[in-house]
Image (cartoon, rainbow, N blue to C red; front, side):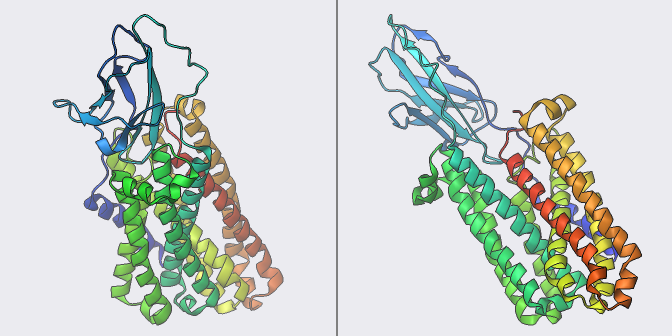
Length: 438
């Protein structure tokens, strides 16, 4: 693939993304106030509780429960554009009333929750300050991070691997190691997406790890906005099986087919878009810029990481002079363009989501972003070493017909890049589950 074609792809793809639509801008849904207010001393028991959120909500995304686990009936208050929810309390007889609430953000599935305590009549409400507000299970959170890490990695290997084989190494469609890598990426991508639905459902309902396996958890989540996005991602992975099977059966002839390329491009764009919609790119005052930057970022990471994996697993072990001469320079140019796109898009996303130097330095999200940037800087140093080898030693390696001693430094550099990229993807998974405001 020539640099001009690669640059054209990076420019046109965001335009297609915008034409397909961009998600509406929003921050995580938070409770603004309640009536009665938290901690209020009431002369008589109220028959309802009114919750006001900072943005419109769907009733299916809101839960209000008593401490006994009973779910209270909810309704939207007319005339407030879906931001005000009424919970029916019945007629509590105790001298104190406590409820827990949770709401799932419609855009990225982030769950916010809290607890409200009220005293009724003369007796003072018991001190409950030592009881923590409800929060998602740590095991569920860790499982969700792991599923997203596997999803990001599978997406990068699949999209980048397909691009590498299609544009730079058509004969690789017959290479067993390349075929196994693409098959493994597809399998893990599908499994991670299916598991992500259950884990996201358990996370949103503040449930435990067992809840991630219940059919009801899947049913409840699939009726929400984040659930629809996750379901679409699963269906896109199913469609990706058709694209992959056609390539594995037809080999290089299929990879050169215009019809197959259009289908593969459509599926890959769909996977990239569905993955990006679960992140924070739509937050801030310029959602269109965030959407464009997110797609460029994911596309660049996929082309870079997937190409690295195919290069390390399938191309370099063969040490064939003709393949090295044909494939390595092309990938080096493609990787340089991808890295430029990653850095530029990353700056836009940081400006869009973080918004200030203070937030970058004093929030968990900002510190994770700085960690990701630091690791990425080390990856770029390894990438520079690889590029330097291509410029100065590739001709000698070809002349010596892929001599092992000559190729080994390049292989070590590629392996170091690949390993560090896995760390970057792990930090990215943590960023997706972290509130930018915390």
